[in-house]
Length: 331
Ligand SMILES: [Zn+2]
Image (cartoon, rainbow, N blue to C red; front, side, top):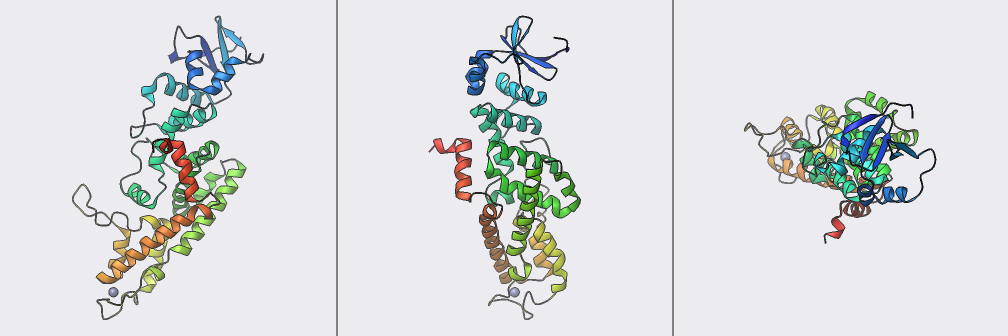
């Protein structure tokens, strides 16, 4: 062997009986332990290695894995140094999380696949109430990144790869907000593989269409029977609504996020919906009516979202989620 190999310090156990080579890195680990964690690895070890995979380094058998070296080392650490990959709600690096999820799925390490998905479940809720809550109490403190666009694209790709489709509606909802702010963000999508790119563009178009259908200020503001104003609420200042429609369409579910909440500094939390009500000078009854209509629109939108995106219905997505997180076995 002529390629100089770089030993991965914390994954080099002197009494290990198996070398794992990825790229120019090599880890010395325990074959029996890996086989006990991963049935796929167990099968790999039980068959004679093909000649190109069979190697001996310093008298120890070596296996080459085709996966990216960074991913493999993250994944091996999660198994061999478990404190480096704690469960939710502990802090986790996004690169580690994605690597562990992908390889645990590929090599069938169920407990680590589940642990990774628990982190993503906190970041990407499956219900409207938690989408609102996440928007307000900054998302997922358990994950290191502030989740830029590129992270959502990576999660989208891996969620499809591992069949965790229950994460997709929220991913598309988050991506919609990026696109709404800056259409140039679409350029980043071209980094995905062509089928995913096409699928994403179609889904972004569809979610935008669904939002426009379900959320319209002209429909949310009604002059209710017990309106307290002489000049009926909603009858004036229509011209200023287009800006508010923009705000509403960017993140409709969170239009009323933060309502009645007080921030840590004692001030009330900024809430778009309340700002809109103030500028339109809505009376108390019309405000309550608008909030109820908005809540109803949120529920209809969220229920319709999976089908609109070409995904299974929520009932099926939630069943997959329960199975993925092991919740179906707890009951
Ligand atoms: Zn009114």
